[in-house]
Length: 403
Image 1 (spheres, rainbow, N blue to C red):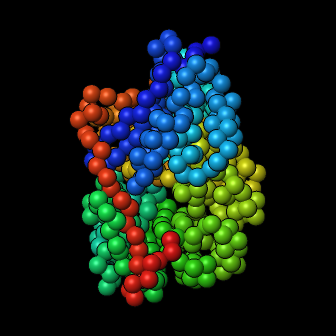
Image 2 (image 1 turned 45 degrees about the horizontal axis):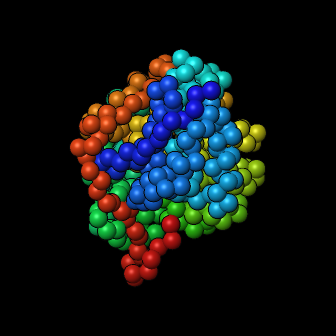
Image 3 (image 1 turned 135 degrees about the vertical axis):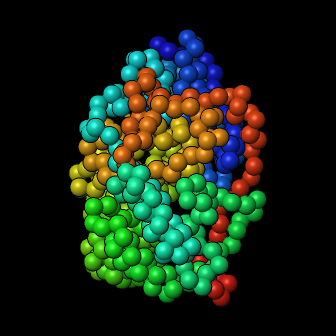
């Protein structure tokens, strides 16, 4: 029985903030779990340090499910992004330990590979339609089979989701929240033009995706989905805020464009009705925000019953620890759809050396025991935490925008 001897939280900022949990067993084997909650990192660090780690010492590291249930049910106050990110870090670290003790990559412990590799999509964005299409063509030349396309909205000084850099994107951009201005009608006019230009330039052998970032009402989302049907989007993501799962029924009435949602979900209860009523086609929940590998597998199992596929969030606010965990999960589940992939900076990759690889538009987690990712603690210590907030949106009349 590999008892947990120690655990600690490592906070580092190699270009952006990451929170990592390191659990060590009595025989010196350790595992890593990502606990990063973008824009609220220290809340999870405190939850782990003050409330979770004391409960782990002396427990059997092999009892992953029991520890998950203990942390979830034993706290009484359940769910929420802080709690579930903390539980996810523990769960992921324990899977890492189990793989190392077994001498196997985690995906083998999850039932083995269901495919040869994991199709990923990159982010093409630009201030104008022409800029976005040029970046998309570059991604296509690199071998990507799926590309998310976003462009600036004419007349808007800035647009959330459109970065200044072709490849590296960090939305948490300031010590206090940046305030963007939004106009729905202008946005609704430009997106069909973007898709038309992209199809003309890239052809039909590449999947095109788009993220609405929760900024439309159900009727507006239905209208946009219908407008885009001739261009066959792979999906429209986060069409409307999903706290009201019933809202997606209205979208379904107006369009056959596939729908994806869930990167901010943290439990199976957030998406149960969406899945059971087949109101979405892809579930975007991810390892770090949805309770770890163990809980995400439960979500995927439910989704599989209703022909809903996975499409896990994979932005740069997920550390390479979480990306590795996501790839092991992706490789194993039968109903995998696609994996978001935003490459990390060289500084981040140096702090988190990893075994996963990219080639021809797909990734593989590698066959190193456990997750196949490590952390250089001395290097991590050189990058101090820097507070950063996600932007907020206002309408042009100053009203706070619901997203």
